[in-house]
Amino acid sequence: MPLEPDDYTAPLNRAAAHARQWLNTLPTRPIRPKATADDMLAAFGGRLADHPTDAAQVVDELALAADPGLMAIGSGRFFGWVMGGTLPAALGADWLVSAWDQNSGMRYATPAAAAIEEAAGAWILDLLGLPAGCDVGFATGGTMANFVGLAAGRGDVLTRAGWDLNSKGLIGAPPVHVLAGAEVHASVDLALRYLGLGLPTLVEADDEGRMRPEALAEALALVSGPVIVVLQAGNLHSGAFDPMRELITIAHDHGAWVHVDGAFGLWAAASPQWAEQLDGIELADSWATDAHKTLNVPYDCGVAIVARPEAARAALGVKTSYLIQDAGAPADPFELVPEMSRRGRGIPVWAALRQLGRSGTIAMVERLAATARALADGLDALPGVEVLNEVVFTQVSLAFGSDERTRAVTQALIADGAVWMSGSKWHGRDILRISVSNWSTDDDDIATAIDAVARALAAVPE
Ligand SMILES: *Cc1c(COP(=O)(O)O)cnc(C)c1O
Image (tube, rainbow, N blue to C red; front, side):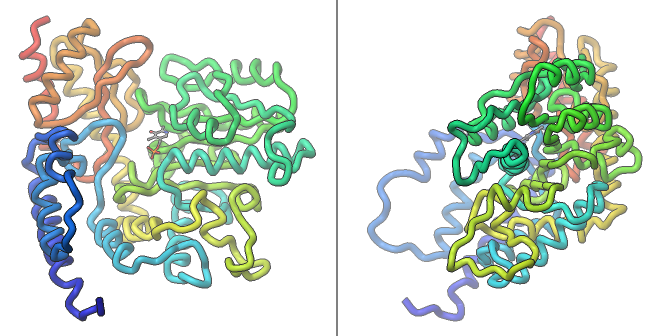
């Protein structure tokens, strides 16, 4: 099939039209999907057709059939889990990433992609106040960014214990102790599982989920040999930050590698108003964050940052004859993440930061936190609402009396469709959790959200 000059024109025009249509409905459409995954499978499944279908028609079919099964995650009225929408420049850049189709692993083969990601990485370090010269890799998300930091740490602590992990493997190695806060995110457990390190030893946290320094010191006194300590910048339920300087100092005195899971909260370091809460975070050895959460780029994009030179490359790099590298050159992108072949997912990060600039990035982070505060205050004023956390960043946890009523109000709220917030459990209680992560959430959305919760409360008798 020879390529015709017009082959891409109609499908791309149709895709742009459908995308505009979708984005234009975000301010008004119900947040929840109308259809279930099984309904959607009925629309998309069945036997694969024998004959080809016109490309533009495929795009039309896809857009029309998917619509009832789409969640309006990009809406300013979406407060579920911790997600975030998409800044316009980031979305435009993401389209180009697909059109360019660069396999972004090697500097010499895809120089534009590599350079754009290097520039974006340097901007992130500068904005977050992390040491210039750290390795920055663009992984699929926070989970794999945690994996990268922990893989680098695992290799480093074993090397220091005299064990060559890459040649000898983990079996027979000195045990690696991993300590994490009692409210560690499940993705850290998962990353540790991938790394063969098992579950971490949990260190006591305070009421807001912050690791207690005395508890870390006590826990470290009980272990010897290679140690990794995992801290958290941004607790899912409270938004709280571990007291970084104190904890990192204690961990380093014990020779530990310190990794920080800052999937959404690390961005607080960009804001002069919030940076104090993360004082000392630059002393850690590795950090994980998401660009697809607080920075509002499209999925999938996590950022893995490693301070110690060579540690990420030692864990994730490969040497083969066909991956040509210049001696002494900066790391190739594939050496800093688990994948070899991948899209240029750091490119939308460059575009987002270019669109916002320094002041815009700071303003966005501060607005997300101010919105969470406004929602907490507005909801706290409704009868029967308890705000359970100190609202220190973008997260608000609520309860409405008994667990049963909290669950019922949550169900009524989601069915209503005006907003989406997530049910969860925290400290043994059913809760409703709000995450303010979308750049476009405005005062109208705040008012809509408070009204929606008031309606759900009215629908469920105490
Ligand atoms: C979202 C999140 C993760 C996992 O990130 P993914 O991008 O979903 O892989 C890890 N830690 C925290 C605190 C998170 O909020």
